[in-house]
Amino acid sequence: MKTTIFLGLAMLFATLTFAQNNYRSAEVFLEIVNPGKYNVYLDEELVSSAKGRFRFYDVYNSTPVLSIFQGNTEILKQRISVIPEQRLVLSLEGKELTTVKQLNIFRNRQYTLDDFDGYTGDYNTGIVPPVLPQPDLTYRLLSPEAFQEFYANYKKTSFDIDRVRLINAVNKKASFSSSQCKLILKPFIFDAERLKIAKILYQTVVDPQNYFTLAETFEFLNYKDEFLKFLENQ
Image (tube, rainbow, N blue to C red; front, side):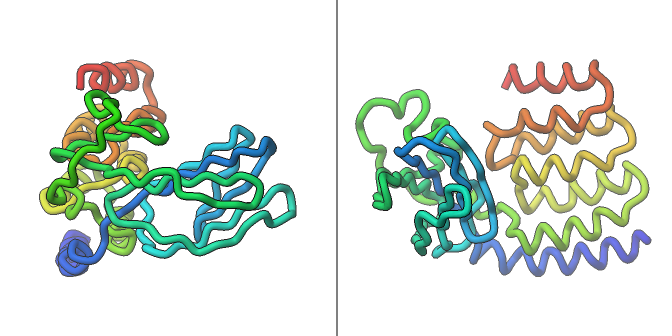
């Protein structure tokens, strides 16, 4: 089994080498001005809300199709363009779609955006921050294809020790998103090992603002509390 896993890992690194040069994610956020409950698709991903705000993370398609429905009525269907490592903020009023902002996601290797359409901390100054060289961290994010190949090998492991070995091997060359980390943690047998890996993966996760969602993977309350205390201290 181990031979099969590490043969698969070798193939993964070959895929990753290609993906690093071709996959950098963007974000698309949409605000619908008119009240009501809407279903919004970005390609095949669906977000539903009655509050008028829709968030799409990890967008790899540079020209995804945005489709907006109210009930069974299609309000808008339009192909949009996104830029890697930027958040595109859109607004829909009536049937008119406008671009509100285009924001850089990272600065100094840190995720720097707030919950919707602004910069956090020192960036809320009204001054548009300068465009800096692309941080290395974003180049290390696994593409969906590379992650699927990794996860297919990962699911074949039967013991926590083998899972840790595979995670460490990949995490030296690639980063994961919070949603990917959640999938990685769920198969662990013991919460103690799950907590240990959660702390390690946090150091390179590309969207730390979403990392709290991993708390639901812990079976015992004391480990869940320890995980949340760890996040509070970061």
